[in-house]
Image (tube, rainbow, N blue to C red; front, side, top):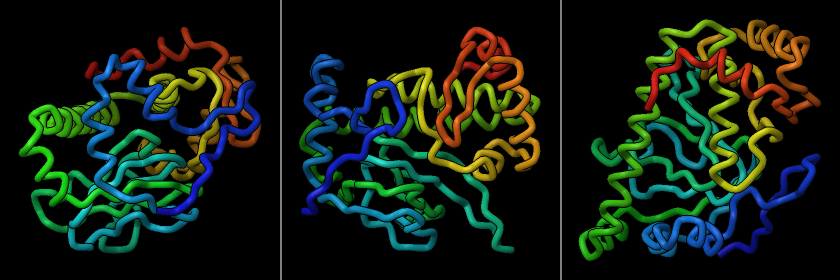
Length: 245
């Protein structure tokens, strides 16, 4: 197992590890994270450097991956080489579950900065789920939540304009950071604006233009990749058209 020190949110008012400890998460969830602890205990830690794939499309499926720290992007690579970003896994997420049925990975997950992931052999996970119904329920819930989120985004991208899409994206990140015990209003964007555009179906120029407009309107402040959301109410109004989960 690799030694690893969790990086912190730089420039924040309070530096904190990118994922709370298992114990603190368990306390917040009233013990509900016990299945997660059992699942993660099956694997081993890999440190993945920026730009390196955690897994690649076409690889034989053998493991799922728990993101312990850092950030990543999940990419579908078209036949002509173009990339379509499908999501941005964060600490606490489990990736590669969509490959269970096919036996091969259909997407590539790439580290956006240095990441620590726990590689969990699927055979061991299957055996544990057979022994522990709570672990099986936990994995079903995770897969269901991922499908629900994906469907919600697909619907949103078909309904929302550029301003609404970016507002929704920022609020989604805010909610995800908050759920992990971090600031809901101030956080780092590990992805580039071009990558945000790929995910939201917008050009780089459009993303940059909307960010500039939001800053001029006082909705947010951008310092390099650090974002501070200044007017949450206005952002929620912009994002109101997103279908509910």
